[in-house]
Length: 38
Image (cartoon, rainbow, N blue to C red; front, side, top):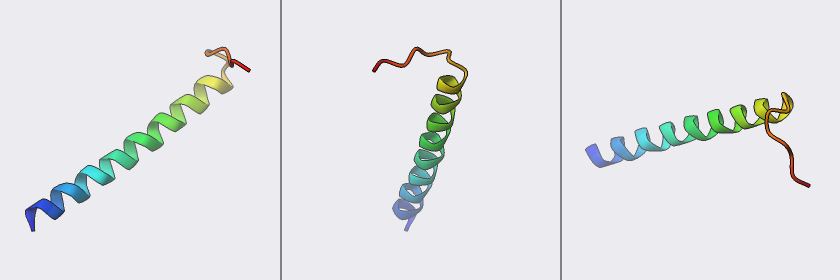
């Protein structure tokens, strides 16, 4: 049972981290801090 809890916690943290990274990337692009390569 402990393994399931660890996997669930890791998955939730992974989703939070992924969402945070996407939010930061979108913010950086919006502020033109990062040149967009076409």
